[in-house]
Image 1 (cartoon, rainbow, N blue to C red):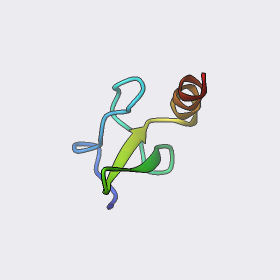
Image 2 (cartoon, helix red, strand yellow):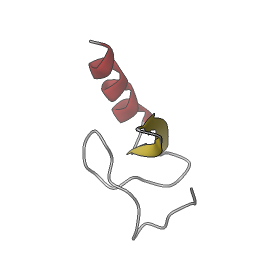
Image 3 (spheres, rainbow, N blue to C red):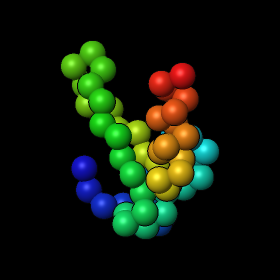
Image 4 (cartoon, rainbow, N blue to C red):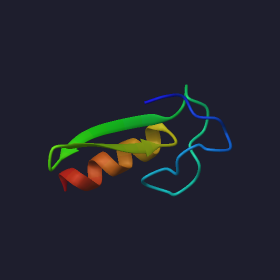
Length: 56
């Protein structure tokens, strides 16, 4: 995994906005069927909302 520029920043898994600077974005890594899957979030708020929706 490498840093991205503003032009190729991944979309937030929760809200769909482009992830901000690397210092603000969060990444959750999971393994599905033996493959690493990266889910990007533009902020702590989106990550926390996503985590709460998974635990409900």
